[in-house]
Length: 198
Ligand SMILES: O=C(O)c1ccccc1NCC(=O)[C@H](O)[C@H](O)COP(=O)(O)O
Image (cartoon, rainbow, N blue to C red):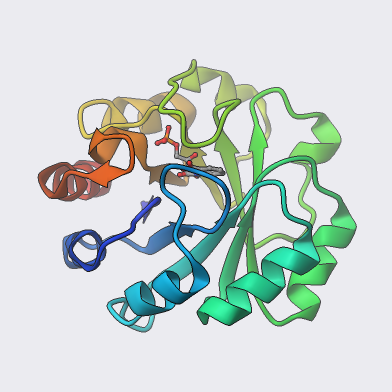
């Protein structure tokens, strides 16, 4: 089970995710209560050991702008939300970076297709909202054998049942491990990774 903890903004939350066994950590580099600057992301990156993916998260930015910002922060992964094209995948890969492409449950079959991204993320309609949805609907999306992450409203309490319902390859969380919006609860971070990993 691949586990990503997103929206980290302090060295302590990065440490809690890393020490719990998270496979990836996310820094939000777009407008959000969780937004960090590229300079801050670079500081946080210092606490991420090699082998753990450090991801810059973007929503409204073009792929080219996301690549430039990720590079400024020293990040090797970008996560692109919003309406995207196959050309965006090429832009990220041509820059030598890796890509998490985010879609929602309502995406078209073409958007669910394999565009060559490194990971697909299936999220709630509003990313980072903490909004849960009917994860069992993922069973009909034909993602068996794909590397994809389930997100949206996950928490330490529901992650195991959500993974079971969706047959998810991995999970991504932010709101469900916070005490208030943008403030990570370190005990919840640890509990989430533990429960997700089983
Ligand atoms: O976290 C944000 O505020 C955010 C803003 C814009 C684009 C993406 C954003 N976050 C992405 C994530 O944190 C995760 O991919 C996922 O959406 C987490 O969902 P949830 O656990 O429901 O907060």
